[in-house]
Image (cartoon, rainbow, N blue to C red; front, side, top):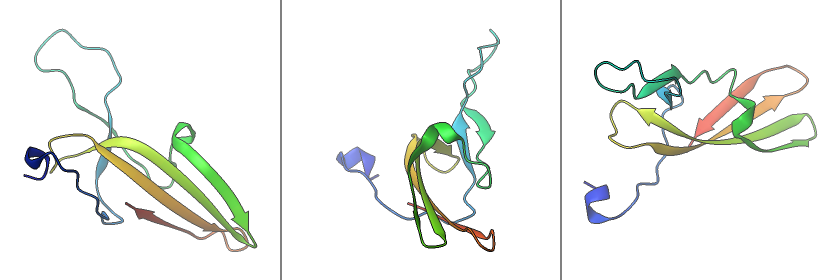
Length: 97
């Protein structure tokens, strides 16, 4: 409904949202073309989507940006994922916007 009004939705997604990368394989020649590729693994985000990384004290902050599919939305979502890692303890947390 928002897209029909020529607007864009800016929101925060749940941390465990099922997001899928666009399918990049070849068309098999039969049926509909595949839309969904691999499910996004938040523990191993692809390095090609890394936009910035910085370290402040013991905290490393990495920002990823990518276009992904969600099964509840009809079009690709432009998602920004902020990953914070504690370099001493090895713990990680991520937020999706």
